[in-house]
Length: 153
Image 1 (cartoon, rainbow, N blue to C red):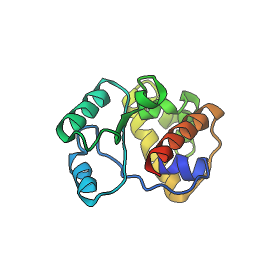
Image 2 (cartoon, rainbow, N blue to C red; image 1 turned 90 degrees about the vertical axis):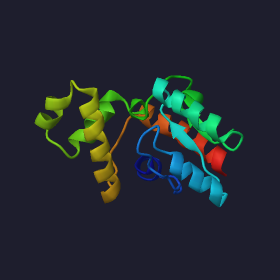
Image 3 (cartoon, one colour; image 1 turned 60 degrees about the horizontal axis):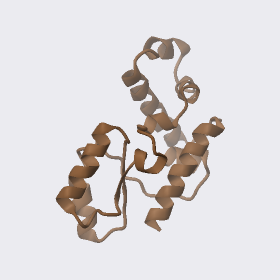
Image 4 (cartoon, rainbow, N blue to C red; image 1 turned 90 degrees about the horizontal axis):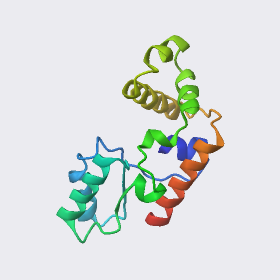
């Protein structure tokens, strides 16, 4: 999120808390609620993300009525976060820091591509290195950041 928001889109900083998975946010949600912080949770729009959203809202209703969303709520498709990046852009991102052989050796495994993509995005964000991405990827993240901004401000 930070890389796409600040480096690619050149937007104002938003404080993101990187979750450790769809069901691992209980403590941070409770902490932010107890602090009275304005926050939202964005989960993947797949079956697991939708299930987690419903669990969080059921357990902490009504406090999370307008705080937990899935990418399906935003885009009306069952996207996972990495689906917002085109396949060609995933390759461009990975090849910015890894050899073609490295990419080719994992390109048939969605899980391994996701893992290397996340690692590479972290490296690019750390170095604040801009790489050119497609308008489709940028537009997906523009829409996501616009949604987030509308909910937290």
